[in-house]
Image (cartoon, rainbow, N blue to C red; front, side, top):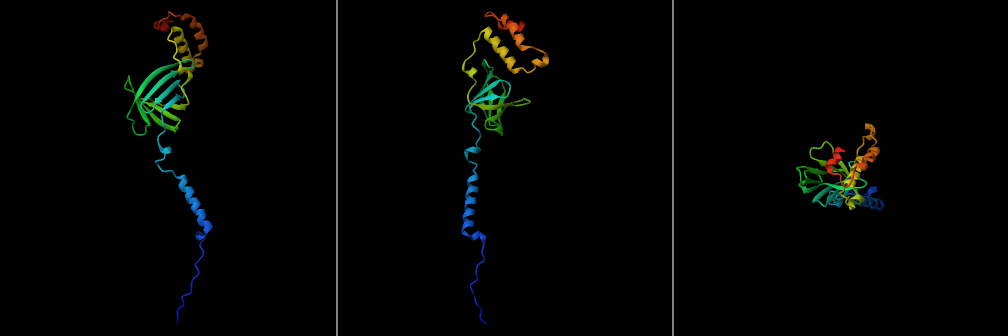
Length: 197
């Protein structure tokens, strides 16, 4: 008996057809394009340099690169320097750390919901300040207020009007209180007289 070796016809595999191979190549290319390597800029920490505003509290925050932080108390009519801090080593999980120059306090810049919304945490504080990136410093920060009794009174009045939330609860008409006391402030009013008026 003779063995015959006839050619076996290969089975058809859909994976071997030209259109299917082309489609698989396209899918593989697109999948590879969607995966970004860890070294891409999107994975780096957000740049902190620039102007920021707190949610509430009336503060403007300026971060100079990764070297310094300056905080200002802002109202509609004023922008007063509050404190400055210099960069220090940031602990794990923090984007940056800044230590006050005049007190042993450290502020950590922590991530939040995105690169334009972060948290500012002071060591020992029960909560954080949420800061949002803004395009520029508030206009009031471009001109220092006059350091006169009248100007100081107006900044005090504006600060309380914009930041104190309990006038209604206390039954206080802040606008009336300000109007009643404004005439008492003259160019000769001393800082000590503010607290006794």
